[in-house]
Amino acid sequence: MAQRKVLVTLNQAPFGNIFYTEGLRAAVGVTSGIDENIVVVAYIGDGVYFTLHGVDRNDTERYFSTLQKQGSKMIVEKESLKERGLKERDVATDFEILSRKELSAEIQAADFVMDF
Image 1 (cartoon, helix red, strand yellow):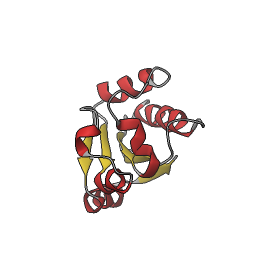
Image 2 (tube, rainbow, N blue to C red):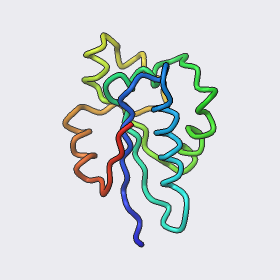
Image 3 (cartoon, rainbow, N blue to C red):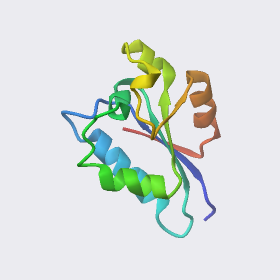
Image 4 (cartoon, rainbow, N blue to C red):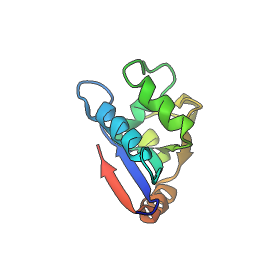
């Protein structure tokens, strides 16, 4: 099997459920194995709250750091921030901010998309 580009969207708030943890765990799983797929993690909707400065990432740190070591792209949708009254400066430096149009291009370029 050939290497594929996989995009994982995290679109729920990082509290009160396990979706963001499971999404990151799935993303790490996709980077494993022979093919070492290319993974992009996109934070959209309420998922953008995970990207803010000072968010407690203790329960997801191992997944997050593994993805960073694998060179996975971590992106935040600019419009999702704006819709929630958040500023780009509120986002931690671990993340790249892209417009909805740029994110759409990432989604279209992906071979597989998983939503959490």
